[in-house]
Image 1 (cartoon, rainbow, N blue to C red):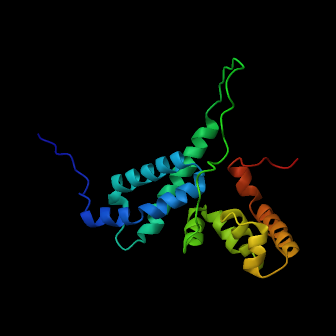
Image 2: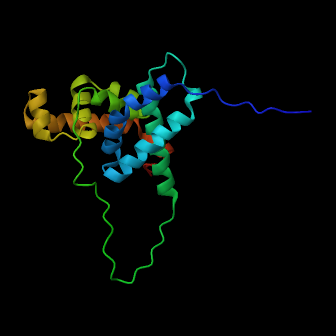
Image 3: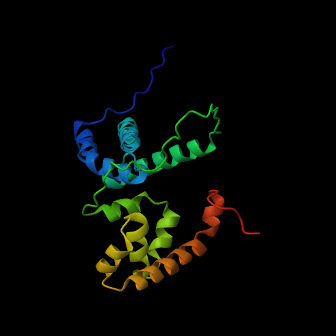
Length: 195
């Protein structure tokens, strides 16, 4: 009695071309998330490998850009969780330099057309929904400050309002998000339950 293994369907050149067409966008979003050139390259590569490896999971007619961003987001989140669970063990002699943990200062991330939508795609659905439900002025201020890393001054110019108004909108918008997402933050251990 012979058994034959079922091979996954062969991926098409057209599919590979579609994936590679979004390489620059994926790398830009990865840079934005990791703020480190080497980590961004690793994240982009891992995303491409998963996309090509699981090509049979891609359903024809699905928006490939959103599918790729979902893979990138999930890969980034899983890597973050794995690192946060890993115990830190350090043996110091006192002569070691402190490890640099801040974002790579040489990485310049340019916001291009459509990047806001790309960044929103990376958010968990509950977070994305909470942001989208904010009143328009608060939502715009929060997105520009917290997703696009714009300065208060730049936000004020873009929103055509005084700096104090931007600060107020950010404070109130972030407070609304905090209230809406409290249980979400507790669930993912981003915060502890208030006593």
